[in-house]
Image 1 (tube, rainbow, N blue to C red):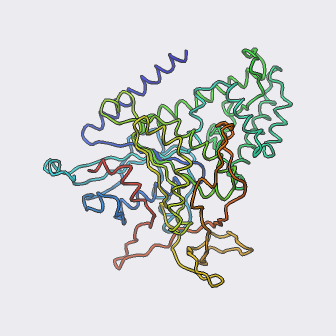
Image 2 (tube, one colour):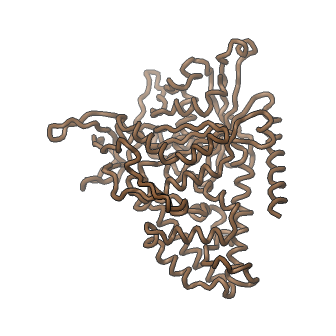
Length: 497
């Protein structure tokens, strides 16, 4: 049955790829996936990307723009009628006019950006101007953590989920949930109320893990934290159970049989459609990572983030791109990992932030390169909310950042009103990223690596988006950024060569 299902899925993917190839015969298209775990800046990245391309932003490392070969960029109706449109206009209004950060990604959305350009090749220039459709696919990174579930039965899912919940850094958070599991009888009669209570405890535990105080990342099933229109459905009303390894098949009419059935429904009605309709059709991928948030939460958050990133890339289908492979078995040939919010640090620390992210994705990066994909890592800020300065403290000059904290942000007993600009020294990242980690071969991927105790000496505030200047003609300048141009060059630059 699994083989038959796999063949059916691959056939449907091939038909979808054929349809994409047919529509791209006249104008080529590139499907770029944009994802990241909660609060990593997906919406901001997409909005800034479009705003800078459409409004001619400063992009010195994006060769098509720097060489003045990009003649125009504009939005067009997206090709997938059943997918919600990314609300670019509302997000730009939030950033530019209201100076607030737009709402986070809660579902899959799409936007088509068309770029007209002149080729860098003399031969292709003779053939006329070029055009490229870039289809931007925005989706929550938590959904990626669900894809490995397709290869796991309920018993394996339960074993891994409970092992994580009982780990040293989670057992306190998970205590009410673990108590509920201990009181449940997998072989007892199925009971809707019992299922709902277990699921509620499970969801509460997952939400607590994601809270700022812990900032943990390995939290499948992803839809439990953002259920949307499936909230309350049986497919989202299950929880792991203590199932002995030698328990054998579940008896009909038992609590375990009910949970297994709902777990399989979750995979069939939630995970598989996402994989088939969106994820398996991507050409390029950027994964945004809030490394600073994890550093601020402490060692366990960093360890958990490393495992999550490995799981995320394990869900990808990396490989070299060719005309035939784009039809028969589409592959992601370029993957960019980006540490966001680099504007929360002085530029002297950007290389260190990049080095920490590179250390976090080492295993995932090696796997993708082995399969033929290109992988890059960078530190960036899609929208730069701060400027740099130097401050004196006790006779010592310190590199600082200037910005306007969001209303209600607090530091050292001070609360900010959202209008006052401040200068602050955010601290320094370690020169050697290995100082954050301590290798321990006895630790499995389910619980993550051991890392050194103690939090970083960094301090962070959330800043308001910048106030944009206007030209003498009254035109608003594009959103400032850090290395957005480098990200664009890696992700789509070859399509405009």
